[in-house]
Length: 196
Image 1 (tube, rainbow, N blue to C red):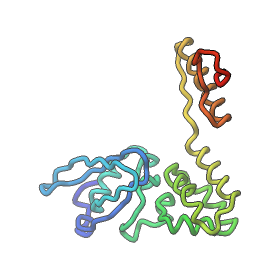
Image 2 (cartoon, one colour; image 1 turned 180 degrees about the vertical axis):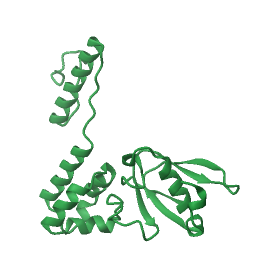
Image 3 (cartoon, rainbow, N blue to C red; image 1 turned 135 degrees about the vertical axis):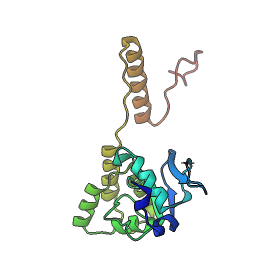
Image 4 (cartoon, helix red, strand yellow; image 1 turned 90 degrees about the vertical axis):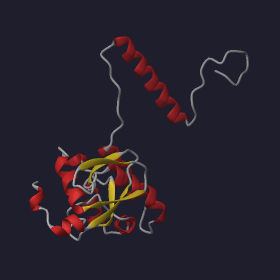
């Protein structure tokens, strides 16, 4: 995007966004001379400001839109231009909009579940479910299922057979302790009946 195509309004309008992701993101900012520098946005629920021009420059540099924090739900809009709406960015929902979704009709709920694909937004939905008057156990389970669908657990693999055997054993032990609800105890020695 050529800088000449950016309007004066876009240069001057200061947007406010909130980082709702647990990981860090980087945005491009402009200093007083117009030189670009990177600002790291770190910390969940951290608010930051950025001009519309800086946001447009940042978004232009992102190769894949699924990694765009302004579109994938990592950043929640607080004060943004009118052209940023739920239709243009379905994952950028306010807390009130999430509460309203829980109270929506079955048809609207189904459409939202197809549309929302941001792990950050779906995690926020799970967190806000207690405060949502329309949140049923069924809807909460659907949100959790959708979250598992868009953000599946990662599985480590290795070409080294010995290392892969170790990874598999650790994975099974972790699953076993998750099911039991307590960590597995290992070879503590001694004759106490508390240890297995």
